[in-house]
Length: 225
Image (cartoon, rainbow, N blue to C red; front, side, top):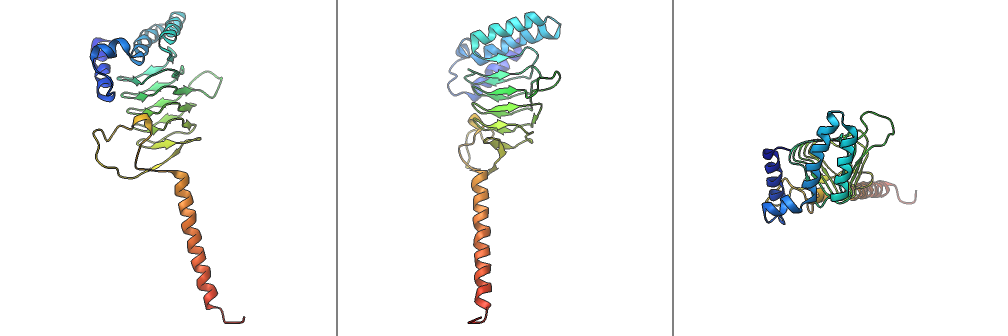
């Protein structure tokens, strides 16, 4: 990671993390940044065919940070790994720019065959704590994956998914806030319509309409018939 890229990453942490009080604290005390620094070195070795050296460095990084990133994974600029403990990023995973991952996130594979088997995350994606994104699927730009969600299907850009298995949720307009584009933990604290609740409400509406229609029909029948 070059000096400019390192400075970009530090600024990204300062912009997203209110607990980041100084550049020194980020540089020396943030395991997510350290894991990415180690990965840049491991990935460079991996690309040059030094597979054992790359794996050894990634193993050392895992021991020091609690974050496991395979040296073959492709990672864009300004990746933030928040808290970080338990994050796993597989060999063929691809991560775009300005992505935000929380602790215990897994970008895993569902196949033992070689080739592309891990997820691709677009730019600006936020993945909440404990979420699992599995398989060679694509998460579109600026998508949000809620905490503890299990994602098995592609997610379109600008979509929020929650639950097991993950499903899109409808978003209500929310009041103004300092950063309207950022959803902590990938899970909006307000303005979300739960998909199950929405379906139940729709069923209730349809049932009420059927009851009203039945009442109208019954009211038109001749008395005593």
